[in-house]
Length: 113
Length: 112
Image (cartoon, rainbow over all chains, first blue to last red; front, top):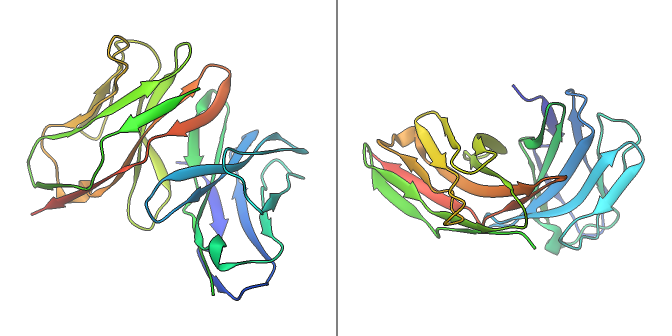
């Protein structure tokens, strides 16, 4: 069973606040990903990392930033939340022998009022 | 570039009906193909995969066959249950690039 965790699961916050969405995995995977999922269900890759100190922007432009200081931890930060950031954020990781399989966390549903 | 075209939903079926969700792809080289499932309030889970032409992936009564000649990976199940209600995503990854390209998702609802 995959061990990838996201906190908080739900967050309601006011405009202008700084927020950090946490993502941790205990599988020792090198690669980690952040996806934004819109209400229509479509998934958009917004950030990824292929290892410690490696971060890249994904296919969808995002005002969020990420860091990868430890293998197991890949937090996403929004410096100033806006209503347009309201969405579901999914974290995933891959690695080991099944490098092409991604394991997903349960997601954080963010609402910015 | 890579792309995945997935059958639009929502799809509503009665329990024990036969399910097909169509998926076709465009990719360079020989991609790996996946079906992921997302149950309400959860993240995505890998349902099945196939890594080369004519491979059949199967899990939980679902199956899909990698058809290179038609660039398709249709998901099928012979008899669906209420517990199969979820959103299903077709996806691919290319050799050497582990980023997944997803379809838009198909919401499946099974009624008793």
